Length: 376
Image (cartoon, rainbow, N blue to C red; front, side):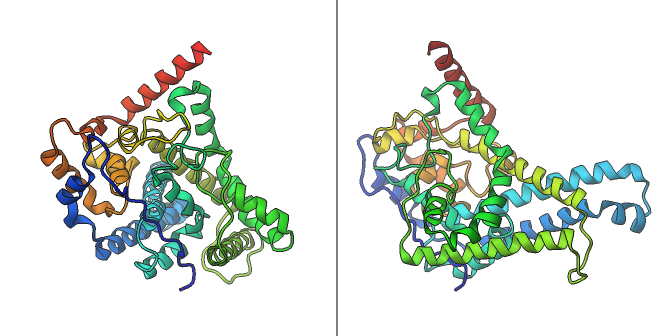
């Protein structure tokens, strides 16, 4: 199947650890491990369709609002704002389905993987291969070590490291275009560049110093196919913007389209960066952590499902539960969490993973970092 993942992610913890009985927890939620394809398809396609409609409403606001609907030009800004926010939030949700795909066996959901890549992964320059390294974040021996590209010990670092992490959202959209639009064809002819790009510019990670292991031959084939599709997508958009040939419907204006796409990319990346900062307590030191320590380092936000579902969609507000059972499908996480909270012992460390507020957890992390800044 073209553009399908050849990567199988399964990093469920393998044994009980001290005060937390993994087998007991699995017994409590054992009925929830089967993903429902109807939920995945309906959720993704509906969000994508509405997001696309709002995206084009933003691009052609004057045509729709002023010419076709006959509304006053004063309506432009409300329509622009609403269309931008709705499309950006829905696209953010669509993109984060990549997280689910990494935890579903490679032999399952093959059609969904293909469609997700073609409708979302390729157009947003986040093909599924850039997230293959996510599984290392769930390996018990890799979590919070140098093998985990999704972890930085921010709780023990100065505040400037948080600011640096957040500032990257301003350049990542441009770097993605350079990586797939310019570097990809060069890697076909320069083997040393091919290796460098794979190691340093092919992963969705937090740590800019992370070095990705070289791929297997099978994974490399998938990567190259997805890279080619991203390359062709970028240049097809460039041709449509600057050298229109009348082959595609609609007339996109570079003066509107390019700032629009960049702003949307920054908006989505900023939401995801804030969500990531609140997903853990970042207490690691670079050494291997026990399973209970990893659990205590992770956070659940079970309250406020509507607002929480905006900044942490597709189940990601239950990040601690996800680290206990990475293969639990996102639609089962809320009820699984409720059942665990009801049936686990009162002294279970799982109960310490619950937090009330995104803002509060960000402030806790920031205060720790500021304290580190003053003591250095």
